[in-house]
Image 1 (cartoon, one colour):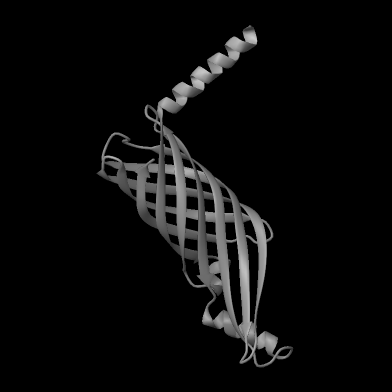
Image 2 (cartoon, helix red, strand yellow):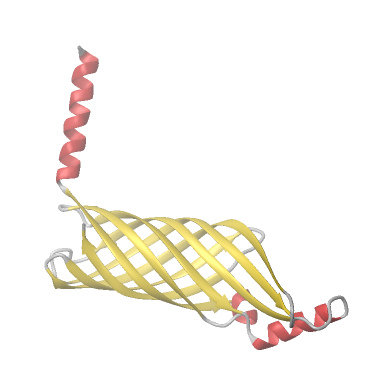
Length: 199
């Protein structure tokens, strides 16, 4: 009997929590500024990001989950140096080099002025970054692509601004700093712009 009452109370609490909560989703385009190692060998990159938010009506706190993909093209100097290093072994080939970052992140966020049209927010994200280096070699009659991928833990502190343009929709501008840790540590800042809406 006590177990049944406990389960019933848990169901009521969970139902009330969901009844008082809201879900929102954002889609953004990213402009990424490579730092440190990325800055040395790669140009600034572009990307896209999707994020689902879960927040309570009576609280400024929210949690979210995001997934994104970002691409960085190697500089001409880096590709030329890599090509020169390969010519003694494999002549007559040209090379195209790219680096990809695919973050899967959980975030804690705090919104200011949540009842206003203009809502700044701060937060921090933790999660997994899948980092891939793509080397494509081509010749007149042959093409081959090598992909080397590592998974690293990373953090993403961020600041965002949301402006409501309709009852259930707003424009979101977000900026933050991505840092991974491990054998393939990379860092880059990003600026994101897109739409956020309730679902």
